[in-house]
Amino acid sequence: MKFRKLYIFIAILLIICFALWWLIDWSSQYTAEDITALETQANAGDAEASYILGVIYDDGQGVPQDFQKARHYFEEAANKNYARAYFSLGILYYNGEGIKQDFTKAFNLLEVGAQLGDSRSQAGLGAMYYNGLGTQADQKKAAHYSTLAAQQGDAAAQAALGVLYSLGEGVPQDFQKAQYYLELGSTYDFFTTMLILIGNKYEQRWLQPIE
Image (cartoon, rainbow, N blue to C red; front, side, top):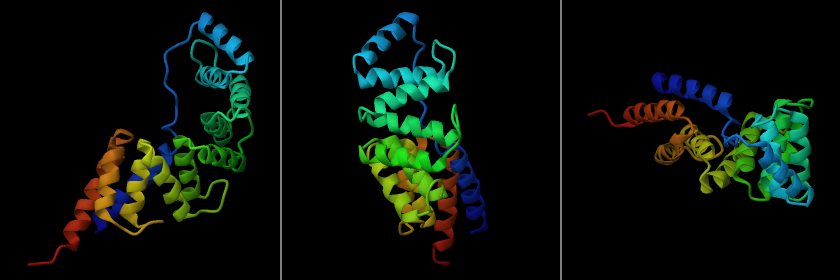
């Protein structure tokens, strides 16, 4: 039992450290011509073009990193109800990048994105409910939003949901479901997943009748 608790403790630390990292749009570098074309589309009201420009400036893809411009384009896309933009804008507030850190604002933005069906927003909202950031901690809501995101294939949410089932937080403790979701989410964080899986094996061994 003590071994499982150690593994769970280490894994939780890793989950918290990586909790909103799934989340970066890793794209190829954009050329000046690409950016000019996207700016033309954005100026014509294309929400997706605005969002992509936000990602470009957020990550510094082919341009100097500029969080102010990233926020401008994310807000532009969010104003057109582009769901993923609420997530990206919320992360800027969450990290305090180019703006004063504000967990409440981040939570509110992720909540809108989650309501629009964005899986990253749902996963992020689950993490914020779990950690009590920008809102009161609520394990049941953490499990609810993690489940919504996991059902859409979000690997981070699947890993988080596996942890919740393993610990019995927000959901009934269920090691089979824990293993199922942790295996689904193994692409998110293999090391954390393996720690939990090993912990589950120790727990199951302890629960077996002694012959």
